[in-house]
Length: 234
Length: 234
Image (cartoon, rainbow over all chains, first blue to last red):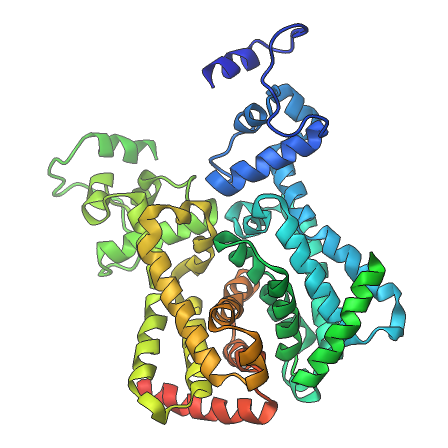
């Protein structure tokens, strides 16, 4: 650590021929991806405030100057990580929406929930935990919060369209969106305790539909339709 | 800040007759409660790692030595705060359980969910957000995690007893507990955006029952029974 620090302080001189810290990620992985992975590991293990860009650079085996070439600030790293926990799910929302009225609202909601669980399960180092950090509330995180709000709105819209009349009358779409996105995010908590399974994804998606007031038969029908839909998305 | 630091370094000499930093909390509030409130405010605003015991002592208007009289470490403060976000709900679980079989499982689940929402809404500075911190995963937080697990188990037990047969067959009590506690904790997220209302509490409790597969009529019956139950608990 001290040696690395000394090297960093030596500035951007030529290092050709000198032994280097080996990147811990597989070689061939782009530096940008390695930096994101190391940052996710350190943020989730030590917290955001307690992690320095030096620690991240060291974990990757590059100089701080190289890190700054890819990310100007630590905030920028966190914004990017948070976005990767939302963006793939938004893509699925869009793809499902593009199918138009041939897809039932219940099947669309089920499919988005399953896809969103997958996004959160595959996000490196369970970075979904990071969005609750007080540090993630500042203005610099507004783009991420806008994306998460967009996903929440999609849940509300699909939930309201799928809901039984008694539930739709009781729960405005906005409130339904809050409940549904949070229900899906249970997988973040599950991941802290154990590796989530495929059954977790279907249990969560079915729970979303029941929360909207669908009975067992309607849930089963939507699940079958959603499985075909997800398979067709590739 | 520098002045306070200088005073702190002066050690535990008599301060009679000297002007003091005024506690920011209402006078008459015990120092221990003032310390907890200040710690909650700072942890949730700046994060746990970025908050020092000196910052907390300063906010209260006491010396660090006085703070250490009440709490040996910063960890101890966080454990205590986290526990206050769970313990009142566990009390309600116990009170409801003491009523025995005269209370239906659905009404018991509804009542516990409403009480838990209230606990989270009244917890100072939305400290429920803190349990996701990486810092809250260490051994020192084991007592808190045990309490939260106890509450989650109660949700699973009540949910399994209340659930429609098709749902009970699909979701083991453990998984049901994970889903239900997380659904109730949606109120932590709501609080970050706006002040939760009484309607939020009933919407969340009803959603818990629908998630268990109860239809609109069964939810309405349980809600009526639960209201009477909660009123009788005082």
